[in-house]
Length: 484
Image (cartoon, rainbow, N blue to C red; front, side, top):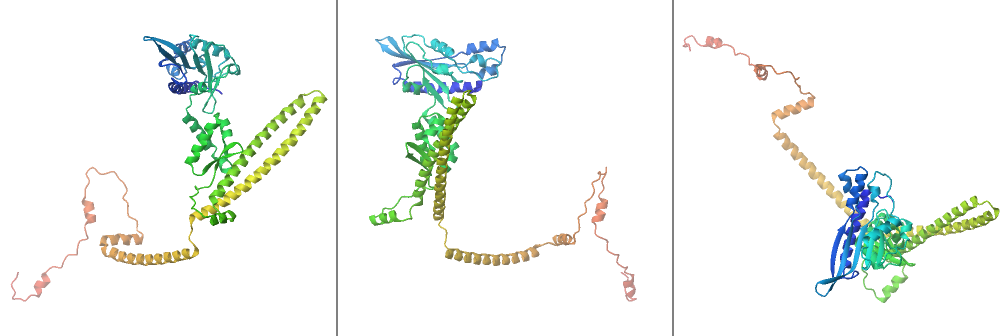
């Protein structure tokens, strides 16, 4: 698993944070002592020296590199008045290949080997007379030689920790069997984080719940967790989602999707009603769906196990076929040919059984689908034909009344609108009807001294014709009239 420097630093931080919490819990329970001292150390000076030797002087890069930090808890017991005796030391340490991260190499960092692990443990264990519990975490993992080694360190128990690649950690003891309590102390992942990881896996594989179910053993193998933790995750998810159910079938703890709604509480029935329900073909659809879904989940798990066995048989067939091609004598070729022929017959039988299981699962899924439709139809409580007809007539009458009221209101509003329209608005409306377009004056530069006389002349109304002179009226007056 290639791990870059940034991820290695994150692993280092997460490991130390989780181990410190576990150390506080283990004081006085798994660690002997009445008083405790805490100390920290790292290899920051060595890291800076490696960077300088490679002519790298980037301070920002130094912040992104792991520094092999470690935290230690020293236990003491009081003796007499001013004396105390050491009872043990617990150390949580990180071991990363600093020489690789401090160089200009671009490839993945190598895992920690046996020689580097032995040197690191010997530096941590000082006084061999005091019991030491040392947990060494490698963000890049360990070699197979380091995992299977037996460290001969006096009075020291060594636990190796490495990331498992799925968000968790893998802890195992070195040498003789290590107490499981010590393995839990150096597991930085808390119980809540493990359950959250199980819930994330269930959410990612939610499609499997639609066609079958999930087993605790398969989830435990995929996320590298104890099966008991996966069962607790199943129960928590089932409590939060009323459609999910848990069941124990054929030594398997299953999680599957049941009825769409939780079944309601059944009323108390007498003996006669209970007998009628037992011999009746009608019943609670939710209970039927749950039973069928549980049966489908069990069949799906059996089919998946059979597919895994078929895959192993096919892999073995490929290995035997390769051996037969590489063989030079006729005797081993004949033996391998007989084995391959038998394997192919076994594979054909297993495929036939898997096909039968698929057909059974398909029939159960169809029945579940039909029961779900029946249950959903009963939940809707749709009205009958008489109610639908009555409601349709009432709605039609209401629409006719509403249309008549709308026409009356429209007539009144039109009369009111006509009475309130002004003469200038009527003139504009008349222009709209005639289709005249308003004249838009072209833009021109403004004169230096604008005069408004032309505009006044254009806006002025046309002059009236001059009135005739009054001479005629004067001539029509009598002669004796006095001139005005």
